[in-house]
Amino acid sequence: MTRRALLATVAIVSAAACATGGKLRQGVQVVRADIEKAKRSGAQRCAPKELALAEANVEFAEVETDYGHASRAQEHVKLAEQNVKRALELSKTCGPTQVTIAKKAAEEPKAVVLIEKTDQDGDGVPDLDDACPDLPGRPELNGCPDAAKDSDGDGVPDDIDRCPLDAEDKDGFQDEDGCPDADNDGDGIVDKADACPNEAGTLENRGCPVTDKDGDGVPDDQDKCPTVAGERENAGCPDVDTDGDGIFDRFDKCPDKFGAPPEGCPKIYTLVEVKKERIEIKQQVHFATAKYRVLPDSFPLLNQVVQVLNDFPKMRVSIEGHTDNVGGEASNMRLSQRRAEAVRDYLVAKGISPDRLEATGFGPTKPIASNKTVKGKGKNRRTEFRVIPK
Image (cartoon, rainbow, N blue to C red):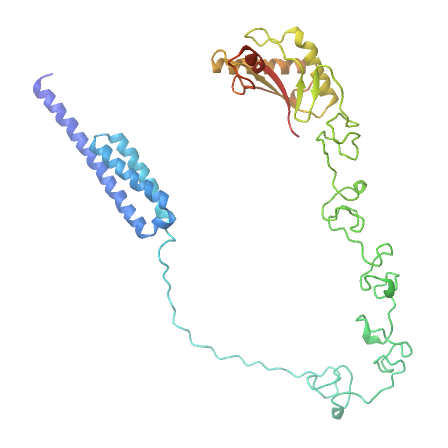
């Protein structure tokens, strides 16, 4: 390349860089204007984080532009634009509220309320002035009738008393007819013995209506858990399963011990022990070295796991494979996954539904002992059977 061509190339590159730098600085100026606008809107109160990020990215953009790092500067401008836009949105409600006081409208003429005088008993004395508004009377007696005969002395004159010889009991129930009401609610329980005289009820409930707040069919007076729906056989309380074996305590003969249906008591196995959270195996599942083929000496152990799953037909299990830290983590992850799947395949071949089994390999990520010793590594190479909660 000639000297003249080289100088021309340098000139073109410099011009492009200047053009890019000019465009970036123009973008920075726009963002700075928006930042000032956000500040005036109260962004320092409502969007301090967004405002700070916008200002920081603008400064970074200017530094990168000065160094000629156009792509980095552009990234910072873009981030600044996003943050100032968010700051503007959040600060819309931060500015001072302007209140416009409208001129008071001309008051409308006040409405005139006319109170119409009524006369229920039609005796010519308005009810407002009538001392006996329900009984026709004479004006000189303030609307009350002449003293009338009241044979039973219950305050209801004989001429309107349906029971003139039996005094009204004045209990707030149909007192205007002059007759006593021995059983107001008509439930067959006389008011004197009725704890709820105005509500029909049952004799067993002392004349009060039977209530069932939780709607479980057990009356509240018999329900030991009246606010929580339960079972009639459980005195209205919900069933509980203390040991979590899926058998309610009232059916469980061993309510404090995880056991198998139908009695809920634990079963005894020689190579495994069933617990609420896991099937605990008493020896390791053995595989071919660095492979995932299950060795025959582990078949009796896995057969007992099959027996457990048959004894607990609703149990679901996660088969989890683990390794020590010898070798690469990626290869150990693959190996532990294949070993877990090999155990699952064995159980399926023995008749266990695949829907009840999961297989997961954790490789060396969950050690239970130190990998610095042979004994510790042996403990970490293991297969576990975790019970999946219902």
